[in-house]
Image (cartoon, helix red, strand yellow):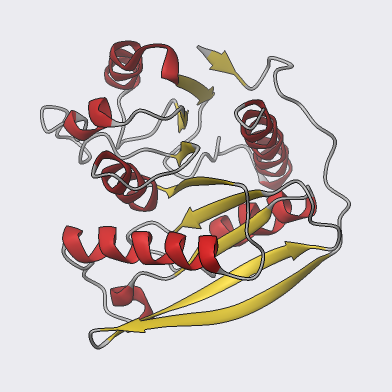
Length: 240
């Protein structure tokens, strides 16, 4: 198990200047917007695709923070809206549509102008879960990361969303708050243990489903910066 208190995978805050490229994908009457963060000296070939959660779009402060800060550290970063969010609907699309959307974004990334050598997939809550479902179904990547994995609905620990995770073959990093109502600590630890050496877990002490320890903006900022450093180190570790 990992803790933010440990000096593991730590890197200095990013100083790259970043340009942002807006785009869109359309198919079968559906449309999604994309934003690609391009570091000024992008050269390491690493791309991070970050998907939003069920209730907030790609422009939410949470997604925007990690999308921007990882780009400042030299990663090509891509965020996008699922079709329902792009259409400003409240109810998420069917899982088949969500998974297909993720696959189309990854294909767009791989065939686009930047040609990353390695691609990591993940996101907040539902976004990370859909990445893992797509990966279990055959979508290739170099690793998956979860910023608050929704292991079960709040108050329903018996309804675990873990069966597909055991089909994923790439490395996985779970980052979860100890107060997350969507992932009871003992249950998530059990899942990660069953997944074996390809999975690691990072606990944010006192963190909720958005990794917020609830101790004010300064502590939240420190938490997000440490999380970004952890992600950066993990991506680099699994790109060697």
